[in-house]
Length: 115
Length: 113
Image (cartoon, rainbow over all chains, first blue to last red):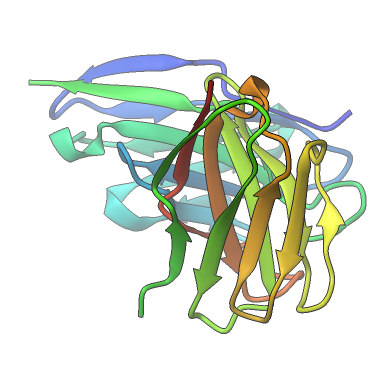
């Protein structure tokens, strides 16, 4: 069965420190991969996506992610966290087995930034 | 350009009441989606519409109905609300069914008592 796992439910990080959020997937073929961010009370905003090509993907707000096929992972990183990065982060994958444009989301990782 | 808008932002219903959540997008997108978000479960797809005039069930369709009113609007109806439908509901749209980049509305927080 297809699945998306974000192992960390909650992460606390100091402002200025680096951040890495983990995402593992289980799919039959190489999926399309996404990271979305949800600020408090807001909808989801796309940070970055991977379809093919260079496995290191740059996104908005200084985030990057690396696709590692051998580990079935797509981890999100930021070298220096700002207080405004406090939010919930979702990894998503597509397509599904019916090869349609549906996304499957992980459960999310809540990021708290301390001064 | 407002993107994806949803109304209402908040709603409290009693068990058995009905209501319709409204969603509209101004990006000329063909595909639209309804998700629910519950703690620890991420977003789960309720229904989607690949194009105007078509709708299909997602992962958790029971207790819901949808209408793709036109290209811009996609509504979600709860005919007889249950406490298990307490959730945050998000509408999203994408250019077409082949585009996996989805744009989300701000959400509707629904409580069923």
